[in-house]
Length: 225
Image 1 (tube, rainbow, N blue to C red):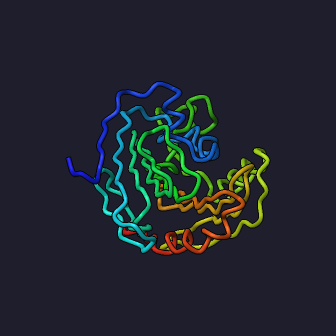
Image 2 (image 1 turned 120 degrees about the vertical axis):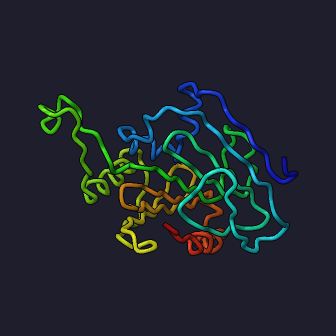
């Protein structure tokens, strides 16, 4: 075991721990409730990488656990945690230590990778599923974007802007909003059948001071496959 990393293979998760892993500020849980990734069973496995230095210079993230389809840089003095369970994986880059599954951070970047999120199986009782053993479909991207915005509004978040953009040639929705305690910029990226969600967050009173650094981390993000 390397001195700068910690590897833990978890047991099958109970419902409480599953919800901890599938947290995206209480937001993405709503979005993925019917997706293959959310429903898949699996063991939670995670690895923590401690700081590589004592400054905020950006260093390259080197995956050790999950084969992520992207590259990104992050501040040398920050912590990194990789998590995977079923078809959902997460990468958490944070100012605060994230040494356990229960640890939550106040300032950082979260990246959630959901394989086959846009590849759904129609219910046998639905109009599409009747009379067929298995019917698959891809939800409309515009409808999905509306779901994301509606869910934020229903949770009482203040939305400052929502714009269509491109990230590494893939269609994306960028939303800037504020929850009770945090100011957040999030990107929903449609990568073929997969969904990648980036979250930049910091406490409301500290966000202005961290915004440039957080955006530099996201600007280093690049989808590789």
